[in-house]
Amino acid sequence: MTDQTPASVAPAAPAYAGPRRILSGIQASGALHLGNYLGALKRFTELQDTGAPLFVFVADMHAITVWQEPEKLAAQTREIAAAYLASGLDPAKATIFPQSAVPAHAELAWIFNCVARLGWLDRMTQFKEKSGKHKERSSVGLYTYPVLQAADILLYKATEVPVGEDQKQHLELTRDIAAKFNNDFGAPGFFPQPEPLIQGPGTRVMSLRDGAAKMSKSDPSDLSRINLTDDADTIAAKIKKAKSDMDVLPDTVEGLDGRPEARNLVAIYAALSDTTREAVLAEFGGQGFGSFKPRLAELAVTSMAPVTAEMRRLMADPAEIDRALAVGAERAREIAQPVVDEVKKIVGFWRG
Image (cartoon, rainbow, N blue to C red; front, side, top):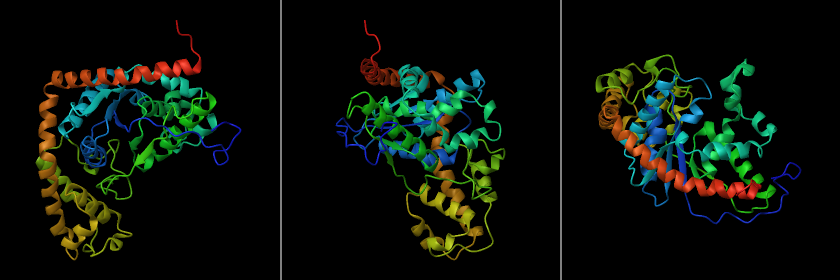
C-alpha cells in the first residue's frame, strides 16, 4: 500500500511463498494470571505440535514503554519464561527467548518507523487508552510500540499470530507495513501478510470481580485474578469469592446474555476442562452458584497446581531458566539476522 494508492485498487502483488511460522509473546511486566494461561500459554503448548516452527518471546523491550525497575524487569523476564516452560512449552520444539537478546528487533523496528505513517499510529486505540488525558507525558515508545510489534512478527516472517481482540488492530498495522515495504522497495512477496489465529473459549478471561472487565495484572484488587503463583487454597478462595448473581445457571448459552459474571465463570470452566460452554450448561443448567463454584474451584486447583509447582521449582533455579533462554536466543538470532541483513540490502544501506 502506497500513500497515494488505496489498498482496494492497488494491483495484486505476488503472495509470500515462504514456510509457515507462528509467533507470539507476553510483555515482561507484572505477574501472570489465569487469563494469560488460558488465552496464551495453554494455546502455545498446543501450537508447538502443529508442525510449524513456533517462536515465543518475552517482550522486555515492550515492557519499558513505561518505566520499569531494572532488577524487577530481569526477574519478570525469568518469571514469564518459567511460566512458558511450566505450561508445557518444550525448548526443543519452540524457540523461547527474550526480545532484547535479538538486536535485529530494534534494527527492523527503526526501518519500519520510516515505512509506517503517522496517520496509521494515530488510529491505534490502545495508545489512547494507555496514555489517557496526558498523552504528552507518555514515552515515544508507547506511541510507536505497534511498529516494534510489527518488527517482532515480520523479523521471523511469521505467517500466523495468536491474537486477542485487543491486538487485532496491531496485526492489521503489521499487514499494512509489510505491504507498503514490499511495494515501496520493489520486493513483492518479501514479507508475508500474517493471519490471526482464532482461539477457543478461554481467549478472553474476565475479572473475577467484574465480568465486564478483562482479567488484568494491573487491577489493584488481587481478588480479581488467579495468579499463576497462587497456591491451591488461594485459588479455591478466589473462585468462591468471585462475583456472581442470584439466578441459577441457564440451560443454553443464550441464557447467559446480560449476565457477564455467570458467562465468565462458565467460560473459565469450559476452557479449563477443554469443553464447550454448551457442555458445561448441559451439566450445570438449573443449578445455583453454591453448587457450581465449588466444582469450578476444584477444577481450577487440579488444572493449575502442576503449573504452579513447576513455576516455583524453576524460579528457585534461575540458571535453568537462563540456559533455556540462551539456547532460544541463539536460535532466534540465526533466523532473524539474515532477514534484517536482506532488509538492509533492499533499503540501500551501505554494505562493505
